[in-house]
Length: 160
Image (cartoon, rainbow, N blue to C red; front, side, top):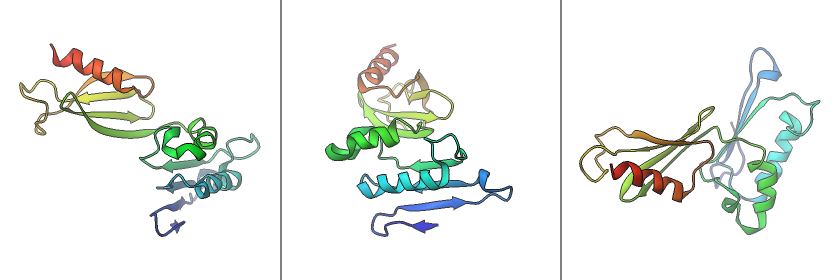
C-alpha cells in the first residue's frame, strides 16, 4: 500500500502476481477530483498499463471511488478533462447506489458484465420501508437510468 495524500485517505494498492508483471494489478482507492489525481492516473497509465498505446501491456488498473458518477462530480474546471481521461475510457464494473423514490428504499446495482438492476421492496403491503422483506428486481437498464426512468418503473410496479 502506498498512501498518496494522508489527509484524504487515498492510496495506491499493488498486487504483484507470481506468474509475472503482466498479471499484476493496481488499484487507486478514493482519489478525489483534484488535478493531482488526474496527473497521477496519467502517470500510472504511462508506467503500468497505458490504455492509449497498443505496444503497452494491458494490465488491470482499477479506479475505486463511489463518488464519481459523471463529469459533474469533478466540478466546472476539471469536468471536461475527467470526461476524456476517466469517464469515457473506464467502464463502471461495480456500483451500488441507494436512495428514496416515492417514499421507498431503492437500490441500483451494476455488476460487470450485467446491466444496471433496479431493486425495491414492492409486495409487503406496506410503505416499502420494511427492511426484513427482500428487495425484488423491478427493472434493468443497459446504461445507468435517470431518475425519471426509475420513477416510471417504480410507479408501474407499485400501482399493480
